[in-house]
Length: 484
Image 1: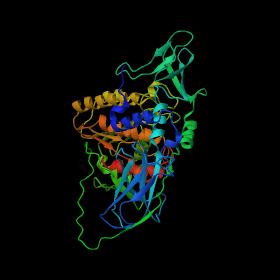
Image 2 (image 1 turned 180 degrees about the horizontal axis):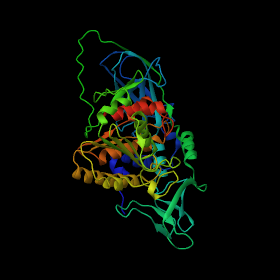
Image 3 (image 1 turned 90 degrees about the vertical axis):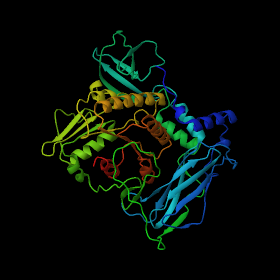
Image 4 (image 1 turned 180 degrees about the vertical axis):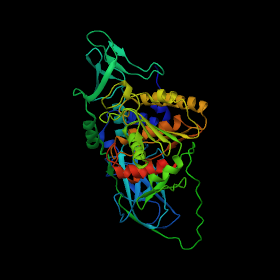
């Protein structure tokens, strides 16, 4: 099947990558963007009052100190509150705008009076992005492999596309052509898959080595010159406050606004709606007689378990703890609250049979009752970000079509797509790429919202695909506010 090229969602970045290849075909490292030469310069002094907008400019330069003539570098910036208390940093995320000429604007609303320290990081340069793109140019994950146990007793290697193999068994989803192939076993019989395990394939570059090589060659995840400057935001005592009253947090497809909030006193404060939820237990009243579906990987399952633990939901039917992606149903008879968890289809980097990894589009089509008392929360990304992004685009287009089919049956059903997170790694550019793609694919669908966690995790970057429990608790309150 012909798949969509990711570059259609990034026309300016695509042009910059082409320009880089044209002007530096030998990939001369002296022309790479350098964090030690690149600098950030504040637009004004270091003293502000509440209501001002912090502004600065990044001037990208190469390793010879020469200004870069085009953009595409991937920066991340935040204002860190001085003397933050608690397990996580308070602060305000900054928005970095690429002008595609070697300069980048940095801005942030100054919504609290405090001292702040500016941090600007070169996550990865355009040249590093070029390498990231190259690494995900095949329709399979380099460096790792999937092995299936067949009912015949034979073991075979599998992947989204066994492109080097002429004899394969086609286990693709017949309903929407989601690709999945295995090498044909010696018997020549493509018997059903019983179980799939995931492991390293030593003849290719493993992804951890790849990440380390990126950091060494492209100087990724490095603070730039000028990062670390302090600013002071003072209260505004000269005017009467005219702060606008925000509307309630409701599920709707809204314009993408950044930054969408800030971290203060250990809690995320939204700048787009009035998020008032203080504890997960407060959701019990609003979720009475309601159903919540969770579709996706283990990070979505964490939210379903968190809700279940706080609302005293009990497992219904069989549950196998050692296979985390098994279907799970939880219920509380007194409150008539039901939650369902279902994983997403392959690739999924955990052992289990096909029944443990249904495609989300199939799961959505299988919902027979929905409506105003039904919420559907979903996310896909972490298990697919090392593949050619056309695979992900195809997957999300299939899910979008299933969402539209369900909304046609039950127009009052509400959907939340939970965005991906900052990863404190140059590989986070993959997550950023997928967030941009999802917002575009689901644009304009009623009762569907993209919940952006990029700004929150810019203030609190996580160092693992699975965030610590305290960070999940903070993010869960943001998510569950939209259920109430």
